[in-house]
Structure formats: C-alpha cells, structure tokens
Image 1 (cartoon, rainbow, N blue to C red):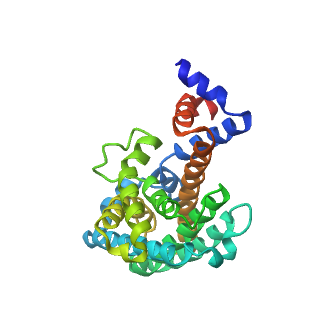
Image 2: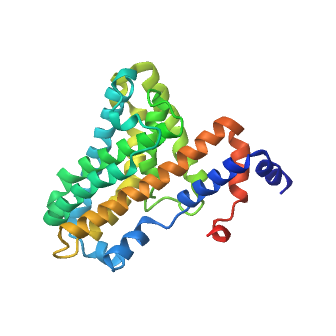
Image 3: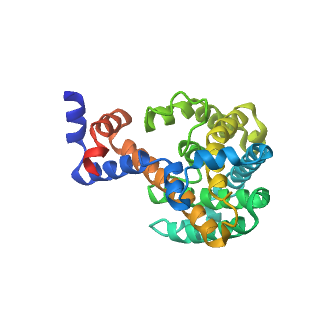
Length: 280
C-alpha cells in the first residue's frame, strides 16, 4: 500500500490526471454495451440470429484487414520522409478519421453482411491510421518496429476472445498477454525487415490479435444486422466502433509515454491506485 502511495506521489499532478484519463479510457464500458445503446437491442440476441456462414466471413475478413494494416506499417511507416499529412499535426485527427469510417459504415448499413469483405479492410485500415496518429501524438516514433506492432495490438486490446481467461483482469493483464508475441515478432522484423512478413512469430501475433479483434467485429456486424438498418444507423455504428478503439489507443499510448518518463513499475503501481468508479 505504501509503495502504491509513493508511486502516486512521484507523478506530477498533470501526469496523474493524464493517467486517470487513460484508465477511464482503458476501463471504459465494453463495445457491446455501447453498440447496444445505439441499436436499442442486446447484441447477444442479434449475434445468435446471424447466419452460420457469418462467423467464417468475419474471421476471413478480420485476418485480411490485419494483414493489410501490417503491410501498410512495414511499407510506409518505416520511412521518415513518407509520413502522411494526417500524422503531422500535434493533436491526432480523430474527427477526420471518424468521418471517414462513418462513410464506410453508411455503405455497410446499406448492403449489410455482403459488404463485409470490402468494408472491413477499409474501416480497419482507417482505424489503424488513426491509432498511429494517436501514438505519434503521445511521442511514439512511428518508424520503430515496436511502435508499429503496438499500434496493431490496440486492435487486440479493444476486445477479448471467447476463450480468453485474462478478460476480466484489466489493461495490464491484457497487454501482458500480447507482450511476448510482440517482442518476438518485433525482433524478427528488426533483423529481417519486410522479409519477416510471413514469419512464424509475426503470424502468431496476427492470429492472437485477430482472435480478439474478431469478437469486436462480430459485435459490430450484429449491430448492423437489423433489417433495414439503413445508411444513417450504419454510420453511427461505425463511429462508435472507431471511437472505442481511439479511446483504447489514447489510454495505451498515454501509459507508455508516462512509463518512458517514470518507469513501468511506478506507472503500474499508480494506475492500480486509481478507482475509476469513484472518479465517474
């Protein structure tokens, strides 16, 4: 208890407020609850009504979307002179990315599950760019392999797989569950470069992230499975979808920024003293 108190005192007031915001973002209500409030129906019922082939479509589309994001990271983010204009401003362009994702959601709302193979890779890529933008705003070096993989793992931190035993233990357990896979993949990418694209370590990391991310995608698709959902509600669902992952990204990269300043153990101890229930 004394260690936690000392850890809290070692952070400046401003940084402690930033850590409190980060915990709010990382421990915010599940995506399923947010989507249910938009569509006015519990997602469990909607998911159970989805056709059997939908799960296979979601899995395939999720894998493809993550591979596309990884390809973008390895081909473009490693070049210091090729940064997108969206990644230049001091503050991340969250609203711009939300608008873009809402546009793809409108199309998905109009065409339903059949739009998934086309819409999801586009939506996920836009979300990934937004996550990178947020990482950059928190002082991360987007040319670093570890940063690129950390951006990708945000998509895995935003949800849990059905068999995930760590789902109820909070941010640091979720992050730790991916840490070893990230470390091995990062090491291979650092030494082999783009030739590591198909390496075993990288594929294992992608599979782990996909297992978690596909849960969130299934919830998003279920929210759009209501008959005649239309373009407007489809856009709203997608906006909630990206907003959820933007919150996770803000929280995750704030914690990493503070860890670079104060050390991992100090930040973790301070994080654990914050009661989000009392702060709300």
